[in-house]
Image (tube, rainbow, N blue to C red; front, side, top):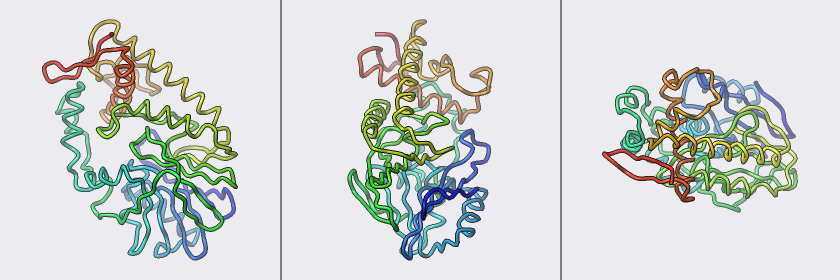
Length: 323
């Protein structure tokens, strides 16, 4: 589906097969002789067909196309490797460039495996379910142009300012167009669903960083928010307050799960009320358990840093208990 949003700006909805996110929003901007694609979809044939169909309908020449990627997740970054032609500029955030090198070479897998086993997963469960990371992104080394907080770039009549908003990922960047009161929010602010906040070795207390980043964009004068998933809306401040309240409730629920005794993050996650159709934790697909445990670890770490719970290691496991 293609939606014309503003002069020179379109949204291309790229379906994500068998994924609760349903689709990712890829945004196209037309400038003077150049195009810019913001986020792309997964490195999968079905995503490539959907995005390429939209680009063809809009008469986009990939040889004259640059890319901006809000963050490293494969539903946003995955197709850039296949789409970027020689000479294309790929704008990206500095903190996630070395992480992407690990993803495309598949060297990050051992770190993720060991960490999740320590937090309660069985090794067999993970090995049988996690895909090869290089498959998610392709193996081509991309010519990243690193952007930082406050950096600006222009495309057509749009003059964007980069706003670093770590939390959903270590280097997530939103784009703000002050004159048009436009915010391209990536996965920092979503309206129909709540952004997943998980653990990263580069960002142990990801929830604290995320809440700080919400405060950072709250004062902006915004009339239209273009998110990475689902529908765009305009009241970013009301949505920020809703997300903040969601995490306050989740923090209380996380602490309450420890009232019966010490637990791993995996065991705590089994006691959280997830907005998902499965009736029991045992029925969750492993990929959904993976996201749920990561979200739980983010909340546990926030509580541990606030001295509201204890975190310690025992017998190769990371355990949590009430302070």
